[in-house]
Amino acid sequence: MKVVSVVGARPQFVKAAAVSRRLRDAHDERLVHTGQHYDPELSAVFFDELALPEPAYHLGVGSAPHATQTAEMMTALEGVVEDESPDVVLVYGDTNSTLAGALVAAKSSATLAHVEAGLRSHDRSMPEEVNRRLTDHAADLLFAPGPDAKRTLEREGITEGVSVPGDVMYDTLLAIRDRLETLGGDEPSVPDEYVLATVHRAKNTDDPDRLEAIVDGLTRLERPVVFPAHPRTVDALHDYGLWERLTAAVRVVDPVGYARFIGLVEGATCVATDSGGVQKEAFYLDTPCVTLRDRTEWTATVDAGWNDLVGANADRIVDAVRAAENPPAKPDLYGNGNAAARIVTTLERHVDDG
Ligand code: UD1
Ligand code: UDP
Image (tube, rainbow, N blue to C red):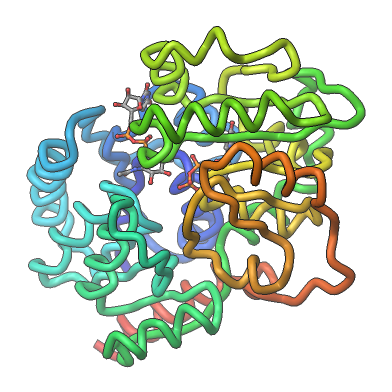
């Protein structure tokens, strides 16, 4: 079986690591890096730590407005898919790299497979919601992380090709957990008790009022905050004159490698984030999460009492972080950490059946 896997942004390196390891055992995988993320701390560090192979193709697309970025990726990907004639094109999650891969594959003879299918925040002002909906509706094989996502697809009329292998991010997390001490390093050093914050979603970084409310909330927390900041957030903080408003209690650092980040999630009293992946990682690592968004696609973590959705509202951020504690019971929401093996088995069967 020949598979072209399309990745480009930080969370996709984490997701692909689990599946790629399995695929390479028995099949021919060509990894394509679109170049959406190019700074070493958003890209190369993950290839090193997660032992991802050197991409067979690096498209070098880089940052651009949505249509330009997606179109440039598609143009380059079309050539790759034509040259390689893969059985399967595999895309992950909900970024512009996902959508570009999906649109190219859907009009080729390859099977389009989507990992992390069926998630919906129902907030179409977030570009990720557009990307994930369109990708699901173009896909032949849809890998849902949990039963809710499968039901969502059914409601949208998608019943063929859907399976529920679990969450590949859980696979990656379990694989690295035992190696945290050796791989994770100890920079940045952190106090005994801290809140870990990440903010990068366009809805927050491109809206000065929302970003100001988040800064206001973070600076009023009772515990110090460790804040590995995405470059677009650092730019926005400077552009909106909010950088000066950060107090010494909020320690902004460069994005950190995966192992260190997972160690920081595990050690935090609470996580405050607008990330998709970090909401789940907090759940897996028993750290309560406060989500800096109005809506989430990871609704089961909220329903289970592990995730408090507070939007960009300073008072609600302060109250939620103060109140955050672990609920007594933790359900299994997204499988047991063998999603990658199940995905590869499903792909093999599909290709064998012709
Ligand atoms: C993208 C995804 C988002 C995902 C995130 C993971 C889309 C629409 N968004 O958001 O779903 O949560 O990746 O982190 O696909 N930049 C750098 N260095 C880089 C890459 C980007 O400085 O290596 C800066 C540039 O100023 C760029 C901005 O970040 O314009 C936004 O980058 P982009 O890839 O468009 O979106 P992300 O915010 O990273
Ligand atoms: N992550 C990391 N270092 C950081 C911040 C995040 O390694 O400084 C990892 C995190 O563990 C998760 C992934 O990046 O696996 C999430 O990416 P991000 O929040 O950028 O994207 P999203 O999940 O929101 O699409």
